[in-house]
Image 1 (cartoon, rainbow, N blue to C red):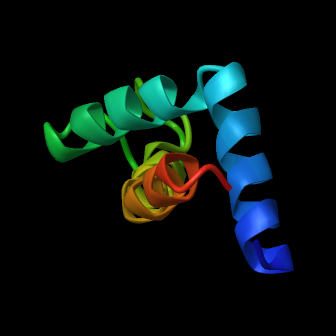
Image 2 (spheres, rainbow, N blue to C red):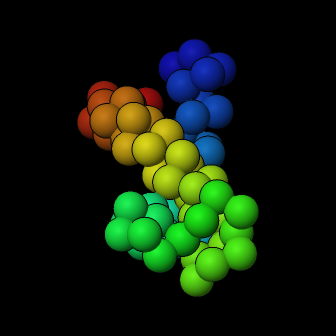
Image 3 (cartoon, rainbow, N blue to C red):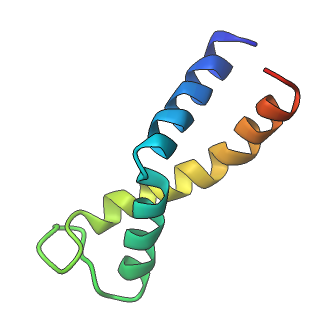
Length: 72
């Protein structure tokens, strides 16, 4: 496993352990529904940032799943 793979796996584990994936996805959904703003002043503070984080996690998840499948 390369250093980048190890770092990605560590980041993914840390996020998953703290429930950030679920929180990011929920905030992203509320943002898309118009209940959040990029200024963080609406019902979902910093919803736009969570939207971006959720997207990054969705892109990272298949790579991490492949690492785990290969036994990293």
